[in-house]
Image (tube, rainbow, N blue to C red):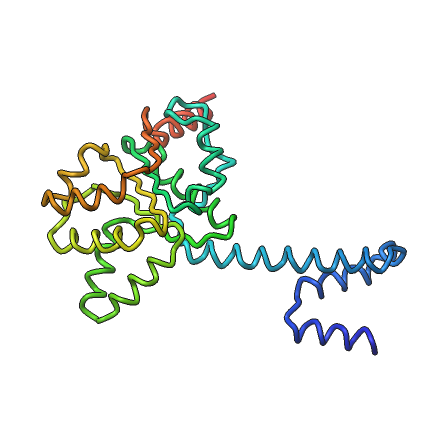
Length: 251
């Protein structure tokens, strides 16, 4: 009867991890020889782990990362200009906590999106709120928000993100309306939140992409001043992976 009451109380308190651990202890007689403090510590540890896993699941779901990638799986074999020490520093996510920006540039297929998603995944694992968006998708969401009156709410949602990942930066020319929207997003986040840009366009061409010199100067000053930069190089990773697969098949 006492065990049933304890189970019901734990369930009512939503201590799911602790409840699972308690049921496991009941099924493992060897744990009955542990001291009360040791058994309690195991219950509490399981509850903490359960809550951390649930929070990570929520953060990853909200991030909507395009690719499931982890920093532990970064490929350093191919000469792309990646340095282990520098990636280790970025993986600490201190730059996100300090509201610094990161720009990843390089040719098509060199792994910009994969790397951006890996760093986004890492930020989620550090308990930080992340959102991945292709820049054209962001512009479309902002256009719709202007029309249906949800613009303030969308801007507030974006500002809450510790790390905003903007992929496919520079694949199309920016219109006048998009320029102003981009300025608002970058201005809101400047000095308060981090933004990661992934682009196949070198940084020196971003001014021409944005157009209108005054706004371009303002956007890039806020985006690039003190930002970390990862200029990638080399052949397409997709092409090299396909060639390796073909060789394996023919071996």
